[in-house]
Length: 258
Length: 337
Image 1 (tube, rainbow over the protein chains, first blue to last red):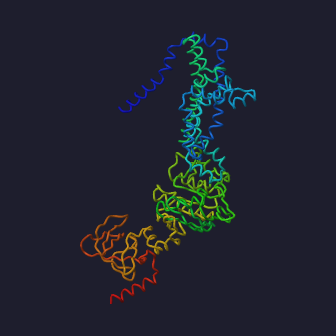
Image 2 (cartoon, rainbow over the protein chains, first blue to last red):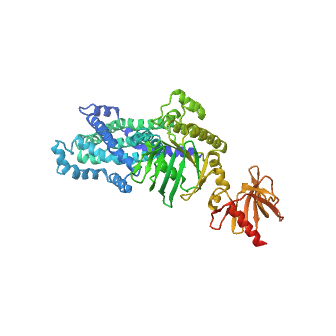
């Protein structure tokens, strides 16, 4: 009886979470999808979003993985201060992050001037889009990766060292494989966040437009019916990576259980 | 030869110990939980840094706090450490766990021979999650052996396993240590495990090494009352200016003054213990516990027992040599006359 109650309860919550997606499908027509997506340049935002999302993931993996590892292993002085720093960008509304990024990387700031000297700009460029997506998704990746590294039993790393592995080799042979399912989940969440980034993006990266911004501008210019197909595209493009991460994590777990 | 003389700071006390373990020798480090046994092993393994000391293994200086200061990192120490949790890598098969160490490159024949000795030949392709506790320990032991460690440190490795499996694994380790001729240290708070394993027994309490010697020497002639308490002496009976230590298993029914200290008292309680009986005996001001083959009479009547060659301790807790005990007993006898 209690098993049925929990299944029904879970089903109700699942359907509630899925409500907007169900609404999306019920308000879409094949004709609207075809006319929206076959217009000239209609798929450019899709390419922009995928490219910027992939670059964001690479940046996060390279720059934030060491931070997450250090946080998980308590290697940093005053760890709560470091964690609070990570949480700050999570707590600030993305729109505010975008506004503050203007003060940080805008054309009249020292960073902006250095970028200008390198013939680059962090406003209304692909770089600006990546910066905005990194700021919106980094806390999700850092916190997820920290949890993934913390789940690795420290004594296994000690054992690997005692068996003759240097720290880098321990990381490659023990820490990384054991944390990999958690890291994959953290990356997939960061990917979803990057693909859906809007608040900071609209402030510093109005061009080139990714899909979220395309949805907004289409809604402004031609109405909801024309904007909804882009939401479907966002869903279809963004979903496979997290889904693959889920499946891979589950398989890794099954393999460990023998 | 493993030669360690270290002081390691812990929150509550400092662990101070000097140990020498010869090649092929088995030393058991015995003491209560929290005595600093694991800290000592971790210092040898390089996992904790001693405040002061020197550790040498096979002529190599692993740690030296005196000039020239030297700290060899754990991955260069060639120290094998087996803990209660065998620490198998869950993402690797038994075969990959066995061959994990960079120095382990066994041939297929060597691997199957070792697996056969360890009784895990049918498990080579299994994942660690599928193994029982005993199997996991065998694999962990095999991994250390294939890594060709210069010493074997066993940190309560058999806790949680049943008695017969513990004995089997102890015998296996003993034979492998003798075959490889490496020094080994077993940390345990089970005296039976220590006795079954060790050539020498060291007793550690609150970071201090209280006694080190042959297991029967330590058990029958504890250096102090504290050592006696730790190794299972449950009663201390006043005898003149001294107290006699009574180990429950060193008591026989009947009065045999030529074999030890004869005590007369009343049995206050008895209960089955193993294949015999355990009885609480009140004798004068003291209460002792003894293990007897037969159920003792629980009544108001007197019950006579003999404590076989008990150790004697002075009022400050230090052991009194046998010759001094005899002279003190003679003096007490003369005073009584």
